[in-house]
Image (cartoon, rainbow, N blue to C red; front, top):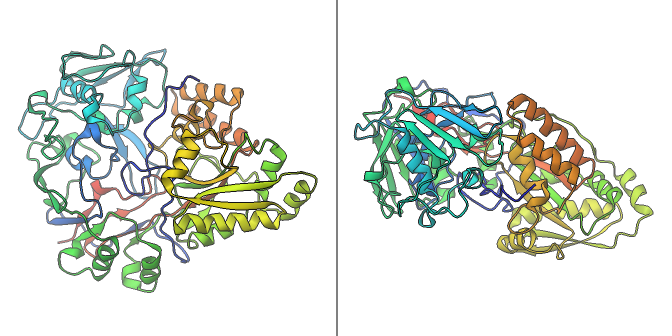
Length: 554
């Protein structure tokens, strides 16, 4: 397919844009993780604290990669959003719109109608023009950094640089205040997920100041930014013009939400473990590190407040450079040889990760479980015995966590008769070599992936479409199969979600038969809440707490 979809990649472990190749983990030995904590009964009101190591919160939706159920969603609504509840797969649902969109027969046009009774914080009614302006301003170079799917999908958007010089996109129509119509340049069945991204938040043109909007946004959600102290704190208070009657996903229980910025992650967790004073009504936005998970596991009271997804989430994988390891039998033998339980141990045991067998991660709708390559060192050794493979260079980021995984993989492959040399590099170097280079510097690479939105499309297309080889793409196994490319195009263009899911599941297994990637583990991300925090949980996807339903006990 043409190189139309090279979206911003995001590690949801931090709720912001990070390199997909950067391995971060929360790991510790434990018996059974729990996805939800908080036995106290929530009541409207009170103060919720959120401790974060981030020194800044960018409230400008054009520049944000914030998920629809974390910080930005307190302040900004979008056309659609995610519905996330305990024990259930995430769903796309209406937010400012009355539904998730009506597609034309050819899938190139999507129409949305806005709800009645939706207002900005100053009481101004939100119109389709506010949505259009919000999308258009995201094209401005001065507002770069946000998720960019729509920039390649909207018709006629090539070369567009925003509305500030009076130019507008003909592919976004607003025939009246309640209706907005998008014209796409290709059929894209996941468009309802795209309009849940930050750029589809309304922005009033007469209140827009590019220099200050990141600090002084105009709220459409249940909270407005009352105070922002750079590097210190952000305080949200109720937006009196928001109505719960128009919003099915935001409970808006606390009266006040205070983000404490620039906090040391270890210190934050210690504060939440102690759960004293305001910290009893707070949670840490940062994952709990391995050493502290061990401490929490030995503390029954604190352990009960630890939220961890049962199945695991983001995919940790071994990419095999198919341009250098060309023999599919060798790639299959590598897949068989890797001891994935050793990888899980390297990630800290059951609380840190679970063995992965599929490319589509847990929590993604349509995922079908299979295990094409159970560990079988004897079979792998027998296959490799007749092969001349040579030394394999295993590229891996030089942080402690990634190196632990690389060493586990190296040991497994050595036992099967292969010679593997680890090449430790800074994560930026790994990213440059794998996404920008010609693939000549590595045979294997340790990588991780978390999709930008909950569709198998966001798992499969970026990692395996031939259009994503080099030039910033994340097909780091350099896998290319014209028939798979065609199948990916077909699945992308399928409007029915169930039908598309079945196609993606079939593509998953079809690619796995050629073994360009060894799925190693689905990482578990653990987060800790104070004793007075309610409805605090983490599902496999998006592997991050749903801020919008959290409350505090009286």
